[in-house]
Length: 154
Image (tube, rainbow, N blue to C red; front, top):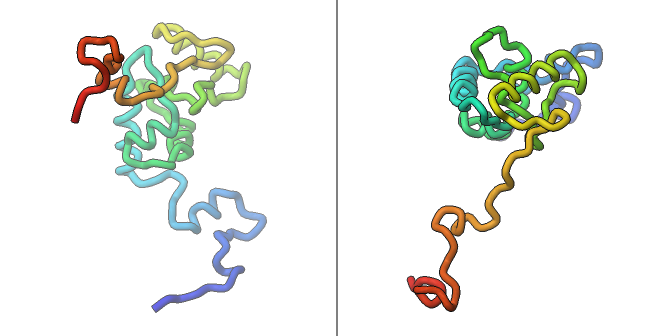
């Protein structure tokens, strides 16, 4: 049996005067996420090696929560654990997500540089993904003049 709701009832709607967080809660996904999701996200962040960085979306995907980059950001914004390497998590384009010039922005850049990460004006240059995944994994295929005379047979 399909139950249809009218447009007004189907809006994720807290009344106009309520904050956006109330609207998110009405959709059934609390802004803080589940305790299990938190634990998985924290495990991924703790697993980022010193000198390396990861994007919010990549952290979420590795934690089994694809599309939940904002949940990762909200968790880090409310972080109280000084041992958590929060500074290793950046925007997808490699930029520090904090407002440029703020104390937090400077602190994140300082921590990354202390680990040997090259930070240029609040941005970390990361290697571009491989254009040819097969070449990245298996190495280049010998050309026509190479030892195997071209592409391998299947």
